[in-house]
Image (cartoon, rainbow, N blue to C red; front, side, top):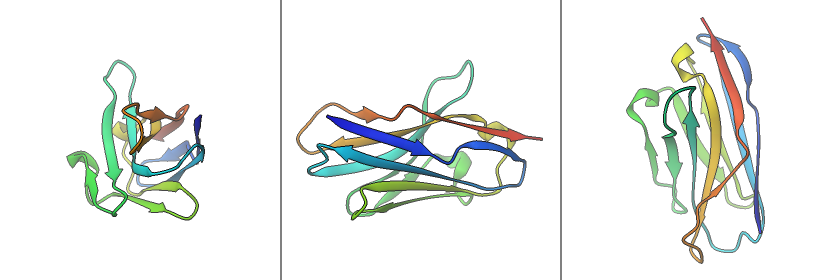
Length: 117
């Protein structure tokens, strides 16, 4: 079994910052890519940022220059530093992890991020 435990969400004013963390535990052998997705009310879940085992990153255009994804391989943890937050960033943020040995994608329980104007 794989567990993804997220933390760091909350309420912040526009222009503020938050840092999300997601720790992978359990059967985490050959952890591959990790990432963050978000889902706002009435909208589909979208990819926010992804980082591969080798450190290659990819971001949705709307967060480029404001968000930074990073990972600590020793801790099997992925982070999302979110700066210059906007009200449109308000959503539930989900951690995602993929492994070499499985075609199944694993998800965290989600953490709420609310940005007030």
